[in-house]
Image 1 (tube, rainbow over the protein chains, first blue to last red):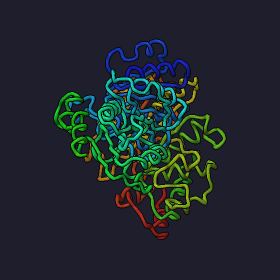
Image 2: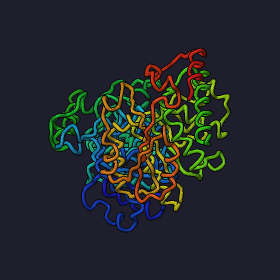
Image 3: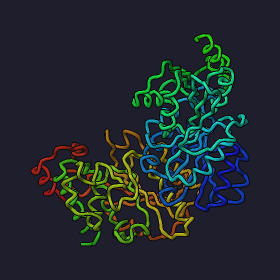
Image 4: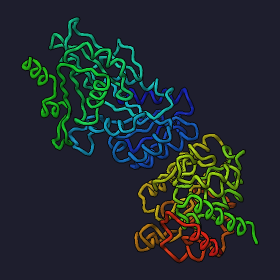
Length: 302
Length: 264
């Protein structure tokens, strides 16, 4: 997913000379071809995320489109003020391409895991938040991002994520429905790479559909309302802390629209930063939010 | 009397007019900026409402000095002096920090310190990409140079070889809590900038303010830093000596008259 997105940014840069890429001391060899063929559009700055965000704002204010890239929390947490004031408040044409969404960097601990990004950017109500599930969705999003001249944050998955969206119409701002059963009573609302887990859960249960919000903000409320009013049970599954993420936003929308499901469950990463190190899947197991635990729990609670 | 001297006195009077009508503002921080901004707006870049978009870019990163910017922009015809009485009021365009969305002539929305230098780098790169021969000037406060992001930007300016970018530091020797040399010493300041790869000049803006224009008119080969030695409250006998004026709200017309009488 990461490489697909970067390659798409390079394709955009070839096509549109106003596209720039700024990285913050990324891995050696990142986008070498881009750097060699379009050196005026490629910047690899030092470990200085706050500076890079404001520099991108300066470029955008003069009519350029800028993609900035490093590990997600070094933008979302460290450079939040620069994002809020120089990008968001100024409505600059900058895409924040955040590596290591959720627990991708689980082995590296709380400094590197991005588990509060939705909450931080939900506070900035018009920031577009994208969390694609696979490389296919990422490719579509990057292509569309060029034409959306507003601040966008993209949360990346690890890479190698199973492709599950290839037969879907992918549009920024639109939720994607996966119908699994004609008589489904449950629906899982999810985002990012939890989609693959949600589909696995839905396959095991006979009565469960899935609604994928790869655009976390603005939330596709129309789809949420239309779909969720039909189900008895709404389950939210997200790779994010309990508060301020997709679940919080969905509860807000349901309440506002007077939709009361008979049951509501919210699977998330809990209230605190996760000091336990481990691979993404191992931490899902540790927190008992991997499909096998959720399937067992839902079946046992019938 | 030179143009700079005459215009400086006029702008300092205008700043007091905004202060009186708006009843608040950071006057001493604005006063130390006056000669710097006049040199840039009137003499070096010759900014007008008509040429604003195509001229040099001037970014006031120390946004709390905005009263000097407002007085100059209204003098240049960007907006009416009727705005003075609406300073910091909901029906006005002039806020306690400048917003480019509201105020014609403002290049950069500032308020939080340590942002302007990096934004200026983005603009300087953009101008080069557009093959423009215009320059970017960003004005920082001395206290602002405590911010780490200023030095991130200095590293980047050197790396990107931006000879169309000049950083001007209003070195008025005071920050909020007290003297800069006590709160967070900057010296040796010139060698700091030089060690980051910038060419650096110093100007005494009290005794020889005309030198600033001379420096700006010389060709630069790298990003340039100009340390402008100023006085907080410069050009006013009371403001130069009495620190209690640094933060002032609810000022009375009588108090403003006392300041008018103390203009140098």
